Image (cartoon, rainbow, N blue to C red; front, side, top):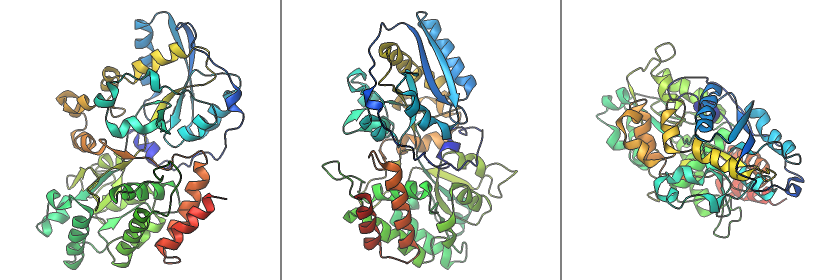
Length: 427
């Protein structure tokens, strides 16, 4: 996890500049904990993250609203930093400390296989599959089962400098596919408008996996094969990485991208040095902040362009609310989760986080809070791609980062790099 955490707070403002990585701590022994449905009443304990997404004040407001409608249930919240969240879930499991737990999109496989979180598939209303954005719904999905409800859906969006496009007679309509983006980039470069039109978050960090995942989806690929097994060296994977390397060779991608994180990319665009980038929703706010940007009013945002497959999934960067497997009051926990992830509550707090629900994006009062971003999200969240949904995610991610970087730096061919990543994942 990288600056995707920061953007959860900043649909209309908040903290930025965080650079985080998921904990490497693994789950052991959690499966021995026993929970139960409970009476559906009493006190439940809930674990939240305190520095991003919904604020503590937001969550306290949600709890008060929930308790007013469910007077027989009391919610006791605990707030910890993101860096402590993973290990808190793991260490609390044997004692059954928490009933509701906030988890990151990259943890469901680990927590589900370790017996830490509850399968809630049977609890989810059937109409959620049609009412909820598909790109949000899959946040806590693992092996075709659901282990949480999305809370704060997000993906990377595509940003473009409108002033640069005008200089060559191009527009948003010319950016519908990645091939067209490259064609426009060549024109920008040949006309001397922008030396390196595209900037990416390709440093050896989780940011690289997010960008790669988004492109992999555009090329029709995924990290798992049809049997649900990790398949890093797929044909689509090789084509994706080859495409990335070629943009560097052609001088369309800023060579500094191999050292950039999301903040670096945002700053490059804000200084008028970059025409195009993928980044989290906070970028739109930053590009229109006169204190840090030279391109205020000269930028646009849209869903990621389509790839050769015709698909345009964004990388899933959401969180989810799960029920601890060791909770002895799972029915009450579910009532709380269902309430705070519901359409009405998410729309009430839309300034803090996006909504899971399709209908929200057709309501003028909702989208008016950040119309350009929400218009993009309406398309971008139809479908998202998950990073490898495997229990040993941290190891897989770190190994893949190393090998992709070697390909980008010309030290290995894309095919060799991904074969080596696959081989390392099997050890």
